[in-house]
Length: 144
Image 1 (cartoon, rainbow, N blue to C red):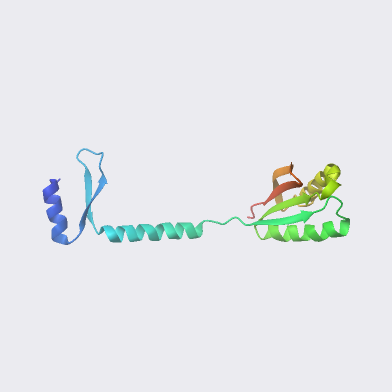
Image 2: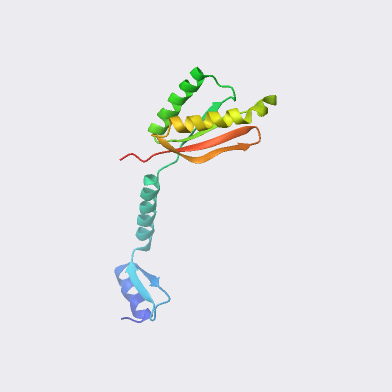
């Protein structure tokens, strides 16, 4: 255990910095180190952690309230591909003009899609009407 003056002298002798590690301890804990190198390594570690963090990709599929079976199957295949790639899926029915009268058909369509994609993904948000859109989110299931 050194006094502040002695610790500063030791750090100065070695050409390093005296860094306070725990100021609330009694007596305060300090360490002799190259502070710039320490900051550089800390930034490097944070960058590696940030790179490893997964980025969430959201893919959208748009339906009309009276989408026929062929179009539905075509869009369902795209949805399957998106979920297999690990992207979240935002399926929505867009109501144009007076087609808002067919809210039930839009909801049935989205629930049918959720049921067809049940083995690939789970519903994160049930169909919800927001203005002229009815949206539903499906997240991919974790693959082992």
